[in-house]
Image (cartoon, rainbow, N blue to C red; front, side):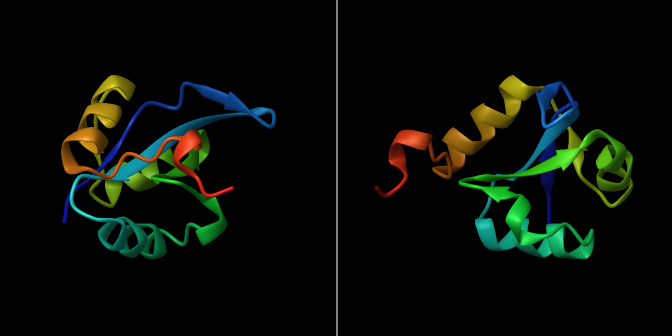
Length: 89
């Protein structure tokens, strides 16, 4: 199982956030997040939002550190990228 995480460079709700993704499946991503006790509500379309204070936990659990650009490339390459415009209305 390989999941990827970008640096916590994304501001929101008074915190900085990372994105946790899989290049295989959402199922793989959900299993990894569950192992970290990340709540399912942190899943947004194609990734989990991980607060900066949990970044090291994700890396220790096996997440591979990559750039934000690489996260998007991995999602596109796996056919797992879901944009806001792709969401059902």
